[in-house]
Image 1 (spheres, rainbow, N blue to C red):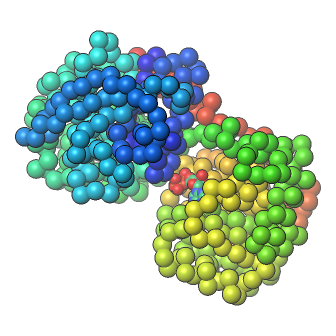
Image 2 (image 1 turned 60 degrees about the vertical axis):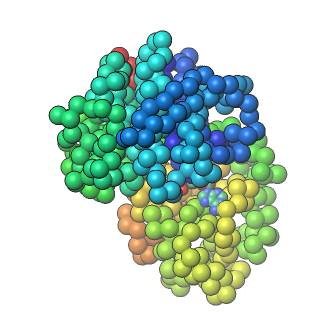
Length: 471
Ligand code: ADP
């Protein structure tokens, strides 16, 4: 099968979050299954662009309203990522340093989508699947089906994957002029709440819609920034497919960010060595269970509750545990976490900033990872943690619900809680401390987790199975 992924991000070319990770890995795994998966994305001014060599594969032009633009499609020559990678260059619109955050983002991504559809319409053959990701590319199914110039593409099955439904790209109706001549009887497919809503349009027009976990899909039916009834109405074509993790990069036996490597067979020894290093660096006590948090210090991740949890647990449970936080985000949360150091030295520390190598050492040396997220479409941290023998302490939401089973249940291996509240999280910490004190149980849980398979192999196959239902 020939699959063309269209996305605003793709690691390592340009990444702002999980979307980039998925589009940078999934096609490689699909190719390993014997398919031909390609990626097409905008040509931003990134380091990757200048460090690689490119060949021009197509030149074309189209209208964005009454403005004509030329576009060029270039292809990376070495196939280094394990899939064909195409960039669309549109002078003055896409060739910027950042991916998002410009006033004319609607125009930029509209032009990108028009260029992609125009380019595909000129191929000598048809791809088997066009797979679009998030709102920046979600109008492509509409364009392929209802723009007069591209009607010949209407028969190609399309899939939309939603990585984050909070962002929908809504724009004023005056921008309908940007869409290449379209069947105006179909205006209802573009409309949501008196706006053109690209994500809603993609949900209505794509042949299948996926989210990055099953539970996130359920949650979207009652909490999706205004699209709740649409998710309910279209549920028949929606499904959840969990993201995977790159098991080559994230392997405690070979991880080049850590010195003390380990496998499931020598996990006790390996983790103890990493923990000792971590505790020495941050002035913590290696005898106590170490709880860590890694991530953006924002409301979505419930990072604002961390100071309360740390303070309350010391007060109610006693200083039986240590905490180490790595992250950056909202200034008031950063300040509170910094201030807490003066009250809790020896049992708590924080590193404000982004530090890839420290994050690997933390997954390798910690006993527990806190993820009390309010919203978590899939979440990668908990999967990395489990592979490194660190027990996840998570709120039952989105992808966390789908990947972590409480140790109180048959075959369970994590600690779960229901609410994003200081009380509930503190209680989960208490249960974590109890688990840590039961040495045999803790060892068993650790080994069980490390044997779980969160690689892309299974998820890539699920996508292929989904495509097959469309052919
Ligand atoms: P997000 O919603 O932020 O995409 P994910 O769980 O999907 O959350 O992925 C987060 C990724 O970013 C993980 O690889 C995590 O280790 C990494 N990360 C987040 N914050 C930091 C930080 N401050 N330093 C290093 N790595 C970080």
